[in-house]
Image 1 (cartoon, rainbow, N blue to C red):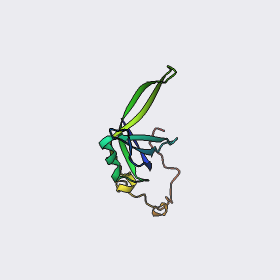
Image 2 (image 1 turned 60 degrees about the horizontal axis):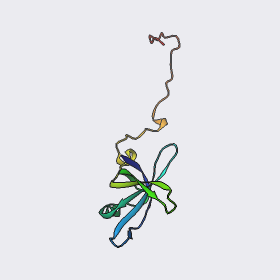
Image 3 (image 1 turned 45 degrees about the vertical axis):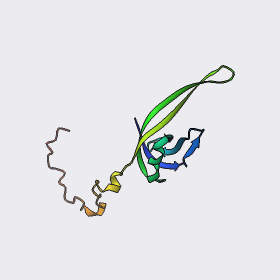
Length: 125
């Protein structure tokens, strides 16, 4: 699966526990009718993948959904989900990459002047 959008925030690498578990979070805002702010975590050696990215950049992140079960001290079972990134790459927008030809200004076209209303059009509609 993948998430694509603009980088809103990149957190610092955090280290937990005696074994040195590392985690780093990034928030990406999707560009759709109802933009979503998606937090993706990178863990262990994948935290370094975020070093070359910055806020405002368009990115595509390959993700895995993770879920886990936890039983609290009262014996209630709780479930948690996380989104874990494993690859990130910059995305070039079409306008920025120059693949879209420029639109000529409206005044570049001459208006049609001498249209003959009596000419028969052979189109069926």
